[in-house]
Image 1: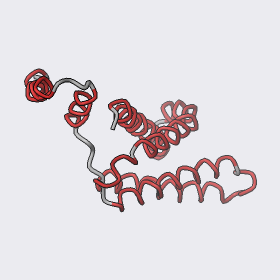
Image 2 (image 1 turned 60 degrees about the vertical axis):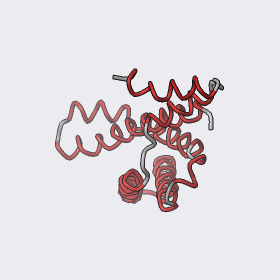
Image 3 (image 1 turned 60 degrees about the horizontal axis):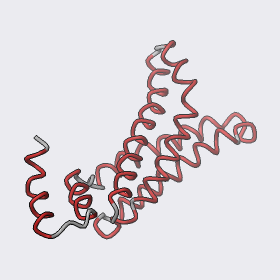
Length: 159
């Protein structure tokens, strides 16, 4: 397990979470009636959705290394969420073909995506950052006694 793979996975999760909140914020500002913020969010709604898709896809690919340590339902929920995000993008692209019902499908897929993201984050435990530190130190290929010293001093150095 490479430190770089875990770093990319952790970064993609954080980017996906930020994009997710931006996309959901558009729905909230429309309902609350904050028009200036709603217009601004409308300008970045589609790009944020694309960032969410790409970051989610990167997270999915780089999470396969922990398959054995994670409940399978967490992966199923993640796949359902990615399917819902793809369907959300499809409803936008096929908006003219779907006619007046495109927004209904868009909202249904949004509800599925939000629900599965919440369940996914509740079921799948995040890997602690100390786990990344241990793998990084192991990747340095230091002699055993030096590696143990660094691992034991790690919590003290982070204070």
